[in-house]
Structure formats: structure tokens, C-alpha cells
Amino acid sequence: MPPTKRTEILITGSGSAGLTAATYLAQQGIVYTLLEQRDGPLTMGQADGVQCRTVEIFESFGLGEEVLREGFHVVEVGFWGDRSSTSTSAGEGDGNGAGIGSGAGSGGIRRTGRTADTQPGLSHQPHVILNQARMNGLLIGRMRGFGGREIEYGCRVTGVEVDYADGGEYPVKVVVKRRGMVERWEARYLLACDGAHSTVRKALGYRMIGDTSDAVWGVMDMVPRTNFLDIRKKTTIRSKAGNLLIIPREGESRSLTRFYIELPGGTSAKDVTLQDLQNTAKDIFGQYEIEFVETVWWSAYAIGQRHADFFHKDYRVFLAGDACHTHSPKAGQGMNVSLQDGYNFGWKLAAVLKGLARPSLLETYVLERQKVAIDLINFDRYFARLFSSKREASAEEFQEGFVKAGKYTAGLTAKYDASPITMDTGVAGELSANVVVGMRLPSAQAVRFCDSKPVQLATVLKSDGRWRVMAFVGDVGVAENRVKMAALGDYLGSRESPLQKFRLKDSDPDSLIEPILVGYGRRHEVELEEIPESFYPITGKNQIRDLHKIFFDDESYNKGHGHLYEHLGISPNKGAIVIVRPDQYVSAVFGLDDYRRVGEFFEGFMIPQKAELLTGRL
Ligand SMILES: Cc1cc2nc3c(=O)[nH]c(=O)nc-3n(C[C@H](O)[C@H](O)[C@H](O)COP(=O)(O)OP(=O)(O)OC[C@H]3O[C@@H](n4cnc5c(N)ncnc54)[C@H](O)[C@@H]3O)c2cc1C
Image (tube, rainbow, N blue to C red):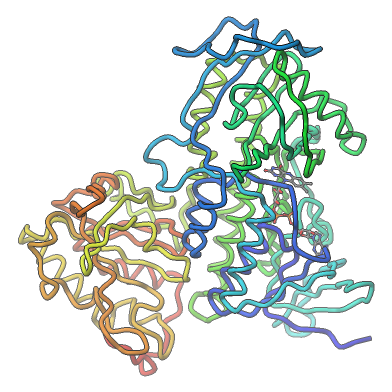
């Protein structure tokens, strides 16, 4: 028997969840082992909807431009219904004319409405469509760029147990089949991202709970030849012949398109043929002609709305992605929620393994993502009812429901409950009306002080494992605000500052907690020397002052005014301190003069480092 292999963190499955966790770990310089049963990366198919929130995450890893350049931007949604239905939204009805032929099962279809896909102000990023294989590929490239370990393909995990008999340092015992040969592994932690049929979940004896009636969905990526009017828009068609969702795909020259088709109850996924999908689609298209010129991928799969009964074992094994939640593809959530599980876990585990945070930080993964999974299942049930041909929602009802769901489907409704890293101090409503503790920080444009560049605030919040203490110091023309800014600056630069106490030996003063200052008003009336030096600390190889942490909510030269304070609901007279996590979620909001509570907050879960080892200066 070959010797047992040892690793700090074992990840099973290189889908969206596993890759995102691995990317964040790689960014943090943590060595992991990522085992994948397939022989190589995903090349085609599966999910394609990329929420605004996921684009924000990719941007924070430095992948935003690729996603925006390559993806199809979903700007408008079209709604189509039965031609015989009487209801039509105002200004609509122009799609019911010139029909050619007639589908066998439908009396024809007509447009019943249109709406913006993402309501204005929700995110600075759009909703895009980009194949999951490409999304995975981008993550693999970034993982490599960060110096992360290569995926080990052809490795199937077959057994897992947690056993403390040998002292418990590496309690996760794993059996792996590598191209037919059995290997034994032990790990400190295991992240199970092995999909809907998770071996790890089954090995732990955990079950999926929820609805058992698996709806079957057909999906095909193909090039249509059609006279349907909205073929290059995200469009829902609800007709007597069934329901269909059109998703235009990336690549304008080719007009690749995805259809999702809900198949009749009782259909078995394994019996579905491409011809079945094509015939159903033709029926639903009613009077419009459609031919399938080229089909590049198709699949039929059964979906239950379920989540695992447990999300962890002793906080040593954690489930993520489809391994702990499955649902229908209608709302385009599968890849996103799974990827965001991995994202939530990656930075937390890195902080624990580096000795920066207590292991109890990992408990917040379960607290936060289990709630998200349950919300997802509930949302999916609501959305399924809305879509269902049985329920007969009117066109108006359907469109209204769809628009209401927009914030959810953009990925911007997750709100994490109170925990050591999510502390509702009760003042957020008063000091920062639109900054919600437990939710991701909204973004708007501000002007960087050192070079007058207009920047989205979100682009400052990179996924680099750092926390941010964001000092919205208000209008510094107000004497009281200047006094508060100076006191806060003194505190952040002092030895008792959390910036000093918790960072690693020989690291820069901003390496764990980055101080950021956002002033309000005319930046040209302020000089750098009037701003506390702790907001431009001495950092880096050359030990020079980093001037890129100071911003003003002010008019830019060429890109207008972002009105950031207004967007966040922060008063220029009072200001606020906002603590932001390494995943852009808001941990706490304090009054400007309540700065000592910033230190108390970090005491709650971080490990103080030995003072004599700290070398950097503020
Ligand atoms: C055929 C198919 C089509 C889909 N189509 C859509 C769609 O059109 N729209 C949509 O929104 N969602 C779709 N989904 C769902 C969506 O792809 C998932 O929600 C998303 O991929 C979940 O990400 P994940 O990382 O949790 O799991 P996955 O992406 O499924 O990744 C799991 C990985 O684990 C590997 N693995 C499994 N078992 C083991 C093991 N024992 N040892 C090692 N590795 C293992 C798998 O090979 C896989 O690479 C589809 C899923 C499938 C399977």
C-alpha cells in the first residue's frame, strides 16, 4: 500500500465552486490539492447566466474585462404569451402580426411586454451570458497566474471520513481512485465541490431534503434560422404548447442561442432526444418558423429543489455548490450561487491557515451559505410557480413577478445574519441608509485624490484577502469633521490599532486591514498634508507612501459626478466608518468618533500577532 498523502486542504471537484475557492486560496498563497474525476477541464455546456454579482467578483479577481468583452450583455427582457390571451402591457402588442405557418400545438404567440433586465442602480456591472466552461477556464488561468497548484485530473474521490484517532491534526481521511489506482489522503480540511451527486455528501450520510418531484429540463445551444422577432433578446415564451426561455449566447457573428425548455411531467431525462427538444420548441414558436442549423451542445436533466440536511462535518468537511443545493435553471442561479459558496469559503480558510483568524471563522461559512441555499430553494419554488403553465399567471402578473425577482436574480439580495464578522450596531440605518450590514457594499464613482482618476468604489475592493476600514469622513470643510478625521487617523496609526495588532510579521501595515478615506466635496480645497498619514502608509518594496487609498465624492473631469455619498445614503455632515470584508460584504457601520469599536470588532475573531515582530510603519 503506497504511503498516505497529506495536504492542508483538499478540494474535490473543479466546477464553479471548487475553482473559485481554489482561486482565492491561490491568491492568498495557500497550497491546496484539487482533485477532479474528469480527464480535463469542462469544454462545453452547462450553466451560462452570469449575475451582476458574479461579474463583480470576477472584476475583483482582475477578470472583469474578459467577462465583459466575451459575454453577451443582457440588457432587455422580452415577454411573449399565447396569442389568444387578452392582456398586453402598455405600449406592447407589436409582435403579434405576420405569422408564417402555425405550430401544431399552439394557437400562436404574441409579445406581451418588455423590461430592463437589471434595474438601474443595482450594480455597476451588467448581467452577462458566458459559457460555464469559459468561466471555469478564466478561473483556471487566474489560479495559475496566482501561482496556484494545477488541478489533478482523473482522480475520483470514493470515500471520506473524519477520524481523530491519530491526534486529530489531519482528521479528514479520504480514499481516491487515480486512474484506477487507490490512494489514501489525509487533510486538515476538505471542501466538497463534487456536484449534485456528491460522493462526499453521501459518504457522510447526509441527505438532500426538499421536493422530490424532479422537473426535467431540456437545454440546447444551437444556431437558429428563424423569423421570430426577439431572437437576440433574453425572452420568455409561455404558450399553450409549453414554456421556453431564449438566452442569446456570446459571439455576435455566429448568433449562437440557448433554449431552455420545460418538458412535460413524467418525462425521464435519459429518454429525451434532441429531436424531442426541437419539436417542442417548434410547437412553442407557434406561427414563427424555426430551423436548427447547427446544434453544438444539448442536454436534458432532472432538477429537484433540495438542499443538504447538513453543510459540514465538525467544521472540517464543508459542502459547497450543487453538492448542497440543487434547483431549476430558469433563474440562471446554478453557477453563480455555487461559485459564491467557494468565494465565501476561500478567504476564510486562507485567514485560518495563515494563523490570522480563529478557526471559528469557518463556522460563518455554514451560517451564511446555508441561509443562501435555503433562500435559493424558496426563490426557485416561487419562480417555478410563476413560470408554470398550470398556474396560468396573467401576462402582467408574470412580468411583474419577473421584475420583482430581478434583484434576486442579479445576486444582490444575500444578507448574512449576525456573527462575529457581521455586527449590526444599530446605527447603519441612521448613518448610511443604503449600506446594509450583512450585504455587499453598493458602488458608485468617486475621484481618486492623488491623480484625479474617476473610479468605481467597487474596483478598490479587490479580492486579496484584505479587510477595509472605510472612513467616510464627510465634508472636511466642516471643522468638526476635520477633528474627527484627525482622531481616527491617530487611532489607526497607533500601536493599539487593529492594523498594527493583527497583521503578520514583516508585512506592510495595510496588508491585512486597508485604511481607505472617502471625503465629500471639492477635493481641490484639501491638501494631502491635511489628511492623516495613516491613510497613505509607507508600503511595498521601496517603502514609499501609497497615495491610492484616498478618494473624494466630487465632480470628475470627464466622467461626471458619482454622487457616492447619496448612493450610499451617508450624510456629508455626519460621515461614517464602514468595515468591509474581503468579499465586499459590509461587516459593521460605526459613527466617525466611535473608532475604538473598530478594534473591538477585529478582536472578536482575529488572532493578535506578537508586537515585537511587527516592523512596518504607518
Ligand atoms: C449536464 C448539466 C447541465 C446543466 N445546465 C445548466 C444550465 O443550463 N443552466 C444552469 O443554470 N445550470 C445548469 N447546470 C447546473 C450548473 O452547472 C451547476 O449548478 C453548477 O455547475 C454547480 O457548480 P458546482 O461547482 O457545485 O458543481 P459542478 O459544476 O457540477 O462541478 C462538480 C465537479 O466535481 C467533479 N466530481 C464529481 N464527483 C467527483 C468525485 N467523486 N471526485 C472528484 N471529482 C468529482 C465533477 O466532474 C465536476 O467537475 C447544469 C448541470 C449539469 C450537470
